Length: 300
Image 1 (cartoon, rainbow, N blue to C red):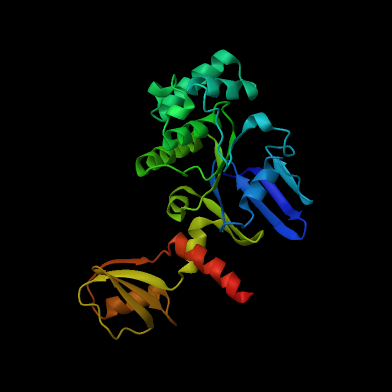
Image 2: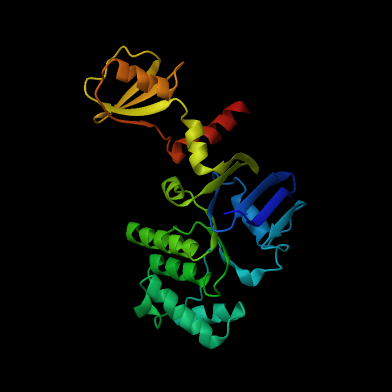
């Protein structure tokens, strides 16, 4: 992943006195799943609509697949937050129609639609009217509708909305498969556990401003520089530099102060503690999200 398929520099968008997007700059790299995160009203959807050329930015620059927003529509697949399918039409007809709108000829659109219906386990529902499908089934149809023209870049706004756990796993698997095929995905979602499983890098925004940006692995490491998980028999209670201790089953979560992880491990060895496992603790993304958003609110 070395090339940016999407680059935004200094994006700004106002609605009257309200600043929805405030000097946002970020890149999305080829072949990654990039998380665009934030609380409700943070500016995520406004940012996505600017990328899709639905809204115009008041200022800033965007390069999308080597061009400006709107110049490469046929190479982008967009799943909007607001869903909309032709409820009285048959599923296969809808998919073929949407494919033709994207420049795909009818025969190819039909072949592609049948293939995608099979990938989301709806191959027997192509002849049904959309309104006959459950909400979760309709969501899967909406998802594959943005794939019908075989785009290079996918922008997905809440793709797991309305899905049960089984179908969440199915869509996760499909997203991973798409990336393995060379696609790039921008994912906006509120389920931090899913973001944590899928995303390589993230941008966390609030009130239109960037709070965190970069490698998810590095962000999580930076948020827990002095926390370790230790599984050991008879872990002493008087270990130096332990500022906090939480028992999680047979594992102790220790917060260190004034001593690094390696020095602490050396201390355990020196005391002849039988260490079964020792690792730096990772902070869940959900905790980081809450800490950053609440911390920003408190600072104001």
